[in-house]
Image (cartoon, rainbow over all chains, first blue to last red; front, side, top):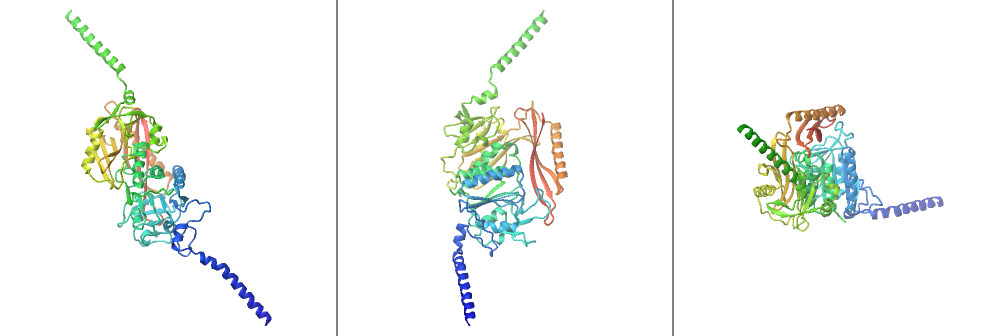
Length: 269
Length: 264
């Protein structure tokens, strides 16, 4: 009898201890607004990948530079320069390289500023290329509704309304990021799904990284997206006059397209 | 005797003409000197300008001096701090409006048509750009705020002077960039030059395909020829388009650009 009582007491104690440990965890579970603003929680069951918390991060504004193809030496330098400038613009700037399309899809809703750099076509981008070439398998992130062929693919049309509502800006440094397929381009769908503003290129693209560097430099100067585009055009044209005539040049008339609110100021500090 | 006199007179005329020419060439300022001595720039009207330092220009536009190109140019500003870059041949190569204090952006009102924007740009080239009347509008894209104009003055296939400009919807010219091909009757680009450059470009493609087995096909998409500023080199700018096979998706595409040079 006494032994049973002891067992019962032990059980109660264990239960009490478990509850004591669990309750604060439940209490700390974030509301939706907390999740949006703090970026301090990882929601595993939603399938959405939150930013990994860096205790040294100085900002609750998140920028991701998503290199979807391995970057060469020149573009790696550009990446480093751009991320340095974005950090100084008040963002926690992080790399998100060579990830499958589904990871990009899951991460995008948590960012305030995203740069996607690599191969693309009308209405889609090609993610997680494992070599600088374009052979082999890769996963596609599609702007338009499509039946997905494998578990790594993803489709922006599946986002709920305003899923990208945190974004001040999404920039596609890819070929054809502004060219629609089945009615949707990557840049236009980004704004459809809540981003304040997006930039894409209608034609194929050369010197995209070089243009990006000039553009982000002007965002840092606290100009609006539209003014930064104008100023970046001046600087870029002055530096690379030999390619101005190419339809693939970032500043070629009608190549760069904006969507959404171009009066947005992206700098946050 | 008459023949001798005639011969002497002809010789005298020739010598005089030669001396006059030599004297003129000795005293006439070179194009570079003219570029450096500019007091005005003609943008529809003669605008008084002052020569300024490159770093001052960079500073006033919030950029690094490295963001301005490495070619030696002469930088001028007018009283509104608009910048004019004059090249070594005394031609306008770049114009940047100082828009620090204007009310540009969504508040500006559409007051001009595309035709107005084109006319305004052509007028502004007058006096600063040789053969400005030969420029024809190539493309014009209105992005909601600006007319993005491009004009060409074609010399031959793939050889042209090219203007890229931004004109605001209120009619202000925001920027002009001019690429000169530097070709004239004394400095032509011949078919032989083109063939040599095309061969280099084709070899580049062949080598690229050999080094990357994932490329299923490659082609030269665009090509442009220029002379260097000192006319000593012929420069070919090529853009390339590639298609690739993929294991799990349809064929995909990409592009790049490359510049080749040969002696003129």
